[in-house]
Structures are given as structure tokens and as C-alpha cells.
Amino acid sequence: MINKRVNSPADAVADIHDGAAVMIGGFGEAGSPIELIHALIDQGAKRLTVISNNTGSGEVGLAALLKAERVSKVICSFPRTANSTVFPDLYRRGKVELELVPQGTLAERIRAGGAGIPAFFTPAAVGTPLAEGKESRQFDGKEYLLERWLRADFALIKGRCADTHGNVIYNKTARNFGPIMAMAAKVSIVQVNSIVAPGGIDPEVVVSPGIFVDRVVEVSQPKHESDLVAAGATYP
Amino acid sequence: MTTEASQVGWSRDEMAKRVAIDIPNGSYVNLGIGIPELVAKFVPEGRTFVYHTENGLLGMGPSPDKSAADPELINAGKRQVTALPGAAYFHHADSFAMIRGGHIDLCVLGAMQVACNGDLANWSTGEPDAIPAVGGAMDLVAGVKSVYVITQHCTKNNEPKLVDRCTYPLTGRGVVNRIYTELAVIDVTSAGFALVELCPGVDFEFVRRCTGAPLLRR
Image (cartoon, rainbow over all chains, first blue to last red; front, side):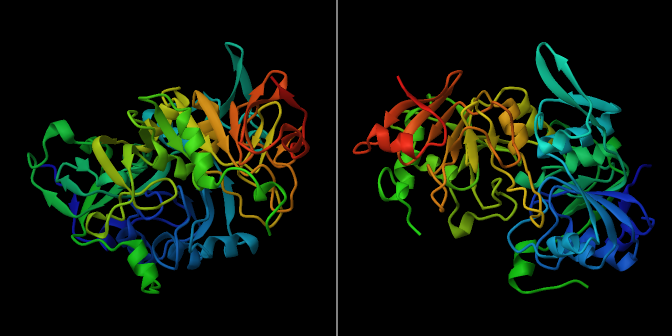
């Protein structure tokens, strides 16, 4: 019998090791797996490489992981947001390395990682500072840049509902990077509001097929980053 | 703070309205953050545009009232929005396949500088202590069929934003098709900037003086 359910966020992240590469889903607060990130802070792994579109806001979730100085490198398209002070401060003090990647290139590098494509050519960033040091090639008279895949040891993702086989559906624009990160990590961990038995999700609407998902954990009432930030919350 | 250029010409809403007039019925449109977002307020009578937001929604509608708000239904500027009937959600790789794959008809972006060869700079001033952040701008200009810029004609210090060559780091090379400012609508052509339309009450000589590269009058 397949049962990918784990009992708690703490159990779900228990084996994330020092130096691990961790993909963290979310675009702003939509899809940010705050409870899994807080469990990772409690767990204590350090020198992490975090792959995520943003760097969090306030001092909760991803921003709190950075604030706790557990992250040595961020691979990201937009490392600042309203209420985002933690990353800019660490970056200016030289405490965290940044690899800035155009958002679509970031998404495609992750997708490629999950799909077994080690590199691809893209037109994005040609002629810009982000093309420096990258191989380029002409196809049909147009210039493209070679970009490498991205893979990770773990992915932390937020969905809405999963079954025990790991099939996942998402909530609105919280889907964003979740499905591709689930493909690209060795161990993909998804927190969801509810876990159902096999058959509880119509196969026609499954977004992440269970083969891409290793662990599902129920967080029935996930917190929203904006509520926590508005309340002045910090973590831990 | 007001500049010589901003004392005359179209308001921001009027600029946005002028952009909307040029968008064909049925277009798939991506609006950048800031002034471009205003375009959505001025869909001409009888036309439907489908708005794409790169964080995974086609069919984006206006901000919700409080009862319908969901912090997980947002636009690229991370503001809460709605999904109109006929909308679709999708993941980021599909969203940028729509962009890079040439499926989005038009994007409207802000600018720090636009050069007369169509180069666009809109993501960084290149200052050493700035936190670099690029988002989806480089993918948009590389893949969307038409790239329109909506911007004030000059900076707050009254320096031209329409220039001979960009001095800020580029977002893309030779990517801008048309520019809407408070003074005029200007095309980027193989011969450089070319006037399409003047704001009523603004004369060509004035626009030419506010522009940092030759401006052709067709």
C-alpha cells in the first residue's frame, strides 16, 4: 500500500541536511509553505541553497529562515518585495550569495531539471548583464543563451488537497512554482489543507501526479504571510 | 517636483486610455506593474481583452471586494485580483511558455529608458548598493509579439527617458515597438523614433526638445 502521508511538518522536514539545495514554492505569499519553512527553522539545517522566486516579507516564513542565517545562497528572480528587509540587509552585509535569474528562465530551469533536460537555449536576457559569461548561439538568425537545469535535494510546496498517493491540486495562483519544483527535487514535500483517500481527487483534475510527490502533510488551516506580517509576528 | 514636461499633456489615466485604444479586440495582454496596470480600466466599448499575469492566471479581473478576497489570488505586483468567467490557472513553466512561445499578443511595460533602436532598460539603475531584481521583464520582452512602453517623457530631474543609447543595464535589445508618454505616441522604427500622434495642445518642437534622440515627423 502506498501512503505518502507524514504526521507533521517536523517529521516531513526531519532529514533535510546541512548544505542541502531546497526549492521553496510560492510567488509572494501565494503558495508559500510557511508551516514547512517554520519546521525547517526548528529543525536547524544550515548552509542551505534556497531556490525560490522571492525572499519573503516581514520576519516570518522564508524571511525568517534567512534571518536565522540558515541560507548561504539564494537563486531567485525578485529578491525584494514590500516589507522585505531581511534579504536586502543580509545581502548588503555579504552574508548571503545571490544568483539572479529571469523569472521565466528560473521556471524553465526547474522544469528542465524535473524533465531530465540538462540545458536549453532561451531568448530571455540576451544582450543584458545577466547574459555575461553564458554561452550563446544563433538559431534561424536569432541569438539565444544556454541555460542549465536546476535540481534540488528537497522541495517545500503548498497545495490545497492531496491524496495518499501524492496527487496534488492547488489553490488559484498559489500553484505557481509548485508543480515544477515537485518534479525537480529528489524529495518533494507538500503541505495541504486536507488529505483524502485515493479516489478522493478526480484524476482529470490532478495537477501534480503523485509520482512527483514524496511526502504529504496536512496543515488544515495554513497561516497567510500577510496576516502574520500585519500582526508584527516573527519566527521563531 | 513638477517638471517642464509634466505640466502639459495627458494625465496618467489619459495615457492608459490612449494605449487601450490601440489594442485589438480579443488580444491576450500582459500588463506590467505601475502605470501599465491603469490600462485595464479603459477597455474600449465592444472589445474584450484577456489579461495574463505571469504568476499563473489568464482572465484576470479587477481587485476583489473584501468578501471575495483571497491572498492566494494575486497579480504579478502581488496585489489581490479576481478571476473572470473563462479564466484559467497554470504553473510558472506554462505561464512563461505562453510568454516566450509568442502566444501573448502584447505587453505594456514601464521604462527607465528606451533607446531609439528599441533597447529597453526597466529593471535596475545599476547602482552598487541596489538589490538587483528582474522578475519576468526579460522573458516578456524576449517573447511577447508587441512590446509597448508607457512612461513619463522625462525623469523627475527633467532628463529624457527616450534616449540615443540606454545608460542603465538593459532588459532587452531592440524590443520596444511603441511608446506612450504624456506628450505623444512614438513608434520605434528602423530609422529611430517616429511621431505617431501628439497630445492635443502639445507642439512637435516641444516634444523634440524633450526627447534625447532625433524624432522623425512622418
